[in-house]
Amino acid sequence: MSESTPTTGGYRRGKIAVAVALVLAVLGGLAIVLGVVTQQSPPQLSDGAAGSLTRSQSSAPSEQEPTTEPATGGAEPDIKGPVLEPSKPVALAVPAIGVRSRLLHLGLQDDRSLEVPPEEPDSKAGWFNQSPTPGEAGPSILLGHVDSAEYGPAVFFELTKLAKGDKVTVDRADGTTAVFRVDRTERYAKNEFPTHEVYGNIDHAGLRLITCGGEFDLEEGSYEDNIVTYATLQSSHPTT
Image (cartoon, rainbow, N blue to C red; front, top):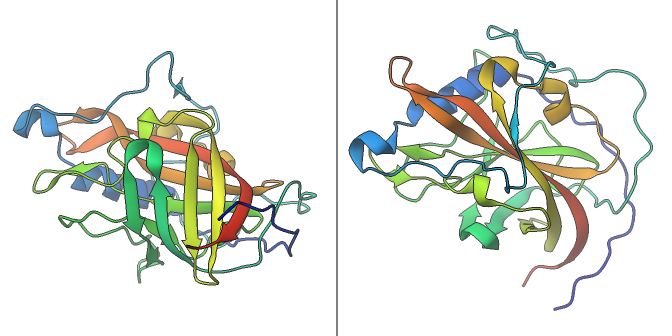
């Protein structure tokens, strides 16, 4: 079925809990470098990739206190481009890297840290349920593991291979599929994670795919960096 451009819907300002240091540390801590076990490691960003190694000056403190306030303050921006009405996500597909995943819904735990997807053979990505639903105005946040010692490569193992223009689709509970196009993929040192750029208010319906990457620190038991793919809603169509 052909794609159609969605009509502009209402804008919901997502109240994103900024538990950045906690959740990203957990994602990295669960991943054990595969080079030690299987001589395989996640693909790295290269000069010709969609993104680049970034050492942002907009950093998140390593012991940041989580908050349920939006990452950026001030007036809500004027929204550009297509926007969809709220509807919870059901499944994610990223054809360029062979990803097809049912989407878990992740919230905050009792200690206000963010849930992460479980480690299991059929690795799944998860949507942070205090971010906008995919297709709403604002940054919708999807998290996934890169690998694990027990099960090997996980759902976002090849996230760094995405190129500008690659398609990302999200099936939604209302029977629509939101179609996003990749803008870029970036790599950030965890102690310099650009909280506002990733989680803050934006003027369009956006998507963030987040995992761990870079070098693996054996002493800390985690990857040193995070990989973030940015994408923008282009259109929608009925789910088939």
